[in-house]
Length: 321
Image (cartoon, rainbow, N blue to C red; front, top):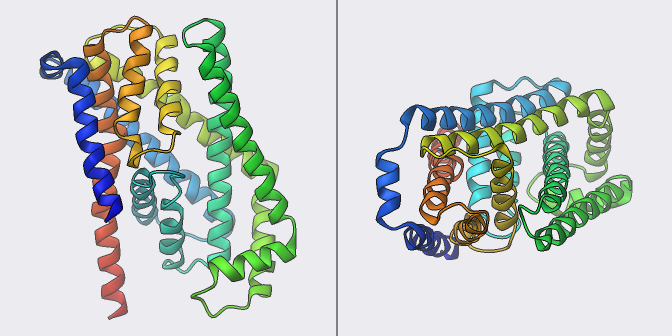
């Protein structure tokens, strides 16, 4: 119930912020937008999702599990939708992915190892690039030095988290307690056996060649996100340098990382638009940009993901009857 209230409040804030900064000018820009560029941006977003599916497919195939792309797409986009609606840590979608992977005859321990490797490659590519771009944009004075401090803090938290998690994963006793307490509460499975399976799967997935391949996919997805934002700018008939595109990406990520309502609704829009005003981009242009980009990268993912989640649950109920 709290999540629903948060989403409703977030929607009001979302449109309130957009139209506060742009008003009727936003509507005029959207009505005159270039649909060809808009659909290119939309295709880029779907290609990013396809690469996420390919990444998960690669991880599972390395463990000799053959799950079809169509099934993995359903699992992944359902998890993405739930992640978007998780206000704080944005990790609510990972248990969703784990649950549906186990429903495809993948043991919980192997599914867990797969998801951890997937998240690790995503976050390393994400925060490494974020810090590099923040340093670059701060040096060119496109964003204030305050964002550099925020970026460094996020970077330290991220890699501190990696160190903490990998330290736990290297200790068999801690793994055993973690698996028994959090993962196997509803499974009639021996925790010691599960720990051995998890440890061997995790070590195997950490081999350099496989991880480099997974990381490359994650890093390429970041480049496609830049490209999506660039085509959204073109869709609203506004020419910008690629440096501004990088700044928009950084701002969107920083504001979406702040604990807030689901999906950072309201905060992301208000914070990004206000920051873009400092860069000399008119408020109605910024509002139109954020409205279109959030529609492509947030709302479409949430709508499709929740619809797919409904049908996945329906399939499982039918199989259990």
